[in-house]
Length: 431
Image (tube, rainbow, N blue to C red; front, top):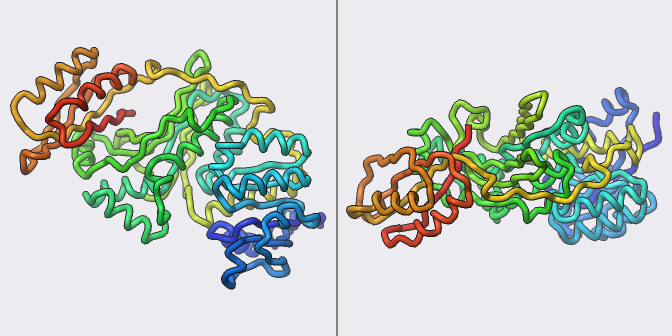
């Protein structure tokens, strides 16, 4: 049997507890099949000092001193499951500087400081692994970093946030409003008490920035991801989407243009009901990788929750135990990422769905069409279902493919018209 790999765990929340349970269950198999011996020697959590906790690993010392565990001489690998930027960031730096390998699920920290931490790990000759940071138990980062090196990746896209997908699919099934379905997601544990990062798109944006760095070898900053949430969608949008043979899905998309520039966004798309993404239900995730020669590859599975995330953390730990602290593959694939090359709004072209809610009166369509025509935006069709009342009448205009710079200028002028009850909603339509 190989020497044990000694683990120090920072954070004992949902994922930390799931990881301890998982390792307890799988340790005999890992030892028998892979000659791997993983042992928790320390667990640190500030919450542990306030109340007793069940499920702690047998024999591990327990403390509320996070820094002591991060730099302890008897810890080989620090597992950071705190989340957020602080204190997680300084603790990960301390661990790496002390010569500890680090495994983390912290996508916010990686999006903000990932390249810096990867360089520090390289300089200290230790491992820095983060498979669990994107799409839970789906091994998408390892696939992009190592499985597609023989081909060129053209785009990475998909459903990257299970909470948003649960809300959208729940609205589609039940015709309930956003608030009602979000409350259900919170009651079931699929959404946090403060769900802003999920429903506003920032969680998915962190994941997309990481995917894009790996896929395209560029230093992609989080702020380069154009981000829109799902909070403005209404039951009527699902009615009109159905008339178009489509359904709303919150997608993160990263696409490489022919000259190497990148288009990045997280926003709601109307996807075809025939597409794979339309069939991804509830809290599941799906990532599609499109390559130049191999075509399209789809990875789907549970993207959140303690157990799926813990499996990805454990996979990283097993790899470190088997390969040692340096696998020879840089954490982000490229040893030195190229500078970020952003595309322009004029490069983003798609047909669009525009939903208006207006105080009904004669001439509204003519005014809307006039504004669109001035900006060289072509109308494809107009949809209006029977709706009670004239004070908040919803209807939809679909557009032929248009670049987002022109559309953005048109939307500013459209929103200034006096008959709107709320600002127009614009959603791209994808196959």
